[in-house]
Image (cartoon, rainbow, N blue to C red; front, side, top):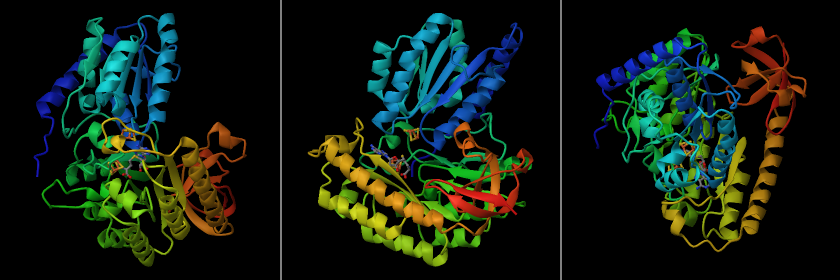
Length: 473
Ligand code: SAH
Ligand code: SF4
Ligand code: F3S
């Protein structure tokens, strides 16, 4: 087992000292500098952005949502599919104009996408408006990099090849007051053949259970009611901690904390999901009655080529096992359509899994070639149109299943946590509050904002594919 490297206390103190000095400097200005933080990608990135915001506050920054007035723009990027990268580059391209209007504006790019050499080369050559580029492993050095940026006009590129370290003690600024992300581990060891994440996020590093529990206690004491444990593969939590704990044990410890709250987690990998996990979920009243268990493909040859470590049959048995212990469990999944060389016949197995499992929700992705992954080299004879055709068929099937599942809730009484207000888009539907069931289902309601943060029983009155409507009783 490789030794986990931890960033030392001295190093973290050094960064704190820089934050303090910058904060003093910024306090002497006529107005505090403004930062705009934009986040792409998964919850792990959202969670990293909360740390970026935490550090920015400690450096004396305030926030704006307007990139024109920002003194500093930080774009936290994702590399998982080409589409995500193109969106980032398009938006960075447009920043040429904001910078022209405000020449002292600084632009920083961080996150998964910039951990790739070819992307860094492209930014060096074609995006001169970018001043600072730092990889996910340099997050804790953000204060030092901002300090350097203020002292020189040189562009800064800080990307290091590493398996990654554990970092503790970064300040966190959470915008939400009911729901909180809590990272329990970083990195991934699975090397699914299509996926870039293990290359940009390093090896699996679990946080010490005591530190996870300490953070959970702090969140609960601040009034948070909905804690989502994060990791690329949460159920391999603890494998690098010498066998003293595992994910199920962690769930049990968290479940014992006093108060009414929900524990959610994502993502789980089928190869590490087992009876112990399902028993724990069934036994722990605060752990959500939901599992996100990506299956990616239904055909065994494709699953092997993806390096997923399970078969169609073992995946289906796992679902049966989960449902035998938790008959009402909500099961959601991710699937990739059009992995290189996947034939129409092989795709039928994916279709079959969706038909048999009847997922509560399914996130469907068209395969995207990622530079440096093993699948990049595979022959891919199928056209985009052929893949799109399969994709559309799958979405149609899932929409039908989702509608049937959603409609079965109408008339039932469900316990929800009211967790926020609806966005403008939903407001047109005349509901002002959002809430979630223990199964993770979104329920839209009407009521005073003072209900946010409360658990309530509601009657389900209607549905769409993505949400239920309810009324308080
Ligand atoms: N660690 C998680 C999620 C990783 S990324 C897991 O293993 O489940 C989220 C989803 O993006 C994956 O589940 C997969 O369905 C999809 N994905 C990852 N790489 C992809 C690629 N190259 N092309 C298309 N979809 C991809
Ligand atoms: Fe990517 Fe597979 Fe790791 Fe998920 S488990 S992050 S899909 S390599
Ligand atoms: Fe994207 Fe990185 Fe997450 S590649 S999906 S932001 S781990």
